[in-house]
Image (tube, rainbow over all chains, first blue to last red):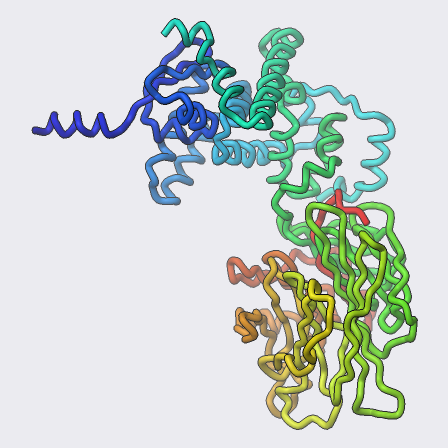
Length: 163
Length: 414
């Protein structure tokens, strides 16, 4: 009896297969995949019977993103979600390359909540650092023109006042 | 399965066939950025280091910047030229959430220097206003722009953004008769640089102490023209210097000039819909009385809600205040939102019964004229909080402090 219910449930919860750029396959519920606006569009027009290739996104990133989408499709209490989001971000920001890839992929897949979450975390990383520290951490060349530098210092000198 | 690998029903074909072309091309651009970025990373950095500058597309940068205090964003503009471009492009800010409003306090009496308080980082910045205005002039502010006018001289109005250089001077409304009182209000469009300035003038009718001519003048920055849709004579009432635009409606406080009967009815509120542009029924007849005997009444637009802050007078001595209240106008009825707790009210020291208040978004700033102390009320959290102490102390006993609230926006221009 119990097995029959499970079977029925399985049929109820429509599953879809997503394939990452490195050919890793992920089978998830449709409502989880729908968290991505882009995948939702694809499913709407082409159905969910065939696997959907997510060519731009590598397996480890897609796995992490689907983990987020699954958690966020459950409709849990706000406090629970906030705590989970924080832990999710704490883990992600440890590896900068992974973190950047996650940002680009969530942006590419149009998962607005996740883009916002990563952007807030990113903003927190940049907020307390000086421009020079940021250039070093993220390997950026200072290519400002003299005019741009002058404009910043003459008009926005106040922003550089010590606390 | 092979068909998917071949790409017949691939990502691109799905997207290009099924989406609106705009969405598809946007995706394609993003995808292109993404790939180019990774190629740069692989080629230049040996795959180990990553260049954020190279791979983060502009719209992601905009997103990240939109979650930061404005001073941080300004500092980030000096990281590299692309970040500079993103920070200073107008489009970056049109969709961003508004920043928490700042409070500018005039801290020197002889020049336009002062300090601006950012509540999100609880910090004061030493700022010089771009334009020569005086602390005792009347002002109004909207979407990053501020306008100033000398109290009883409405022939010149200065418009500027406190955070950037440059300003514009408007000729006041035609018919340059010096009014006895004038009120200034401004309303700017968040997405474009279009703004409206209103001046409400009050002039005593010669030879009649009871009659006051009240007129409303509207300036549109698009047409650079003034119109005067309202002229009305009030009996026993006059306009003052307090007005605000909220949801396209101009609100002005009016004051009883005749012999005071009931203290409660010394102040009233009139409303004029700026989109109507014609003067039908009497403004005075449709006025709304204020909820109690009021001093230092100020009107403000907090997220398109009309809010009034004022001192609550003692029933027998309306000029002495027993507290400070905040009200919101809901369907022509005043609803009390908050009353300043006693410990904060006492915290101003010699309160002098005169104070300034100003607000927008979720915040109301209240300051005593007699000291640089600043109190902040957060409407969303219903919370009172002192600002961090202003770095400029009071230097002489009769020094007066005033200021104005504005939204910090570096791209707003007049």
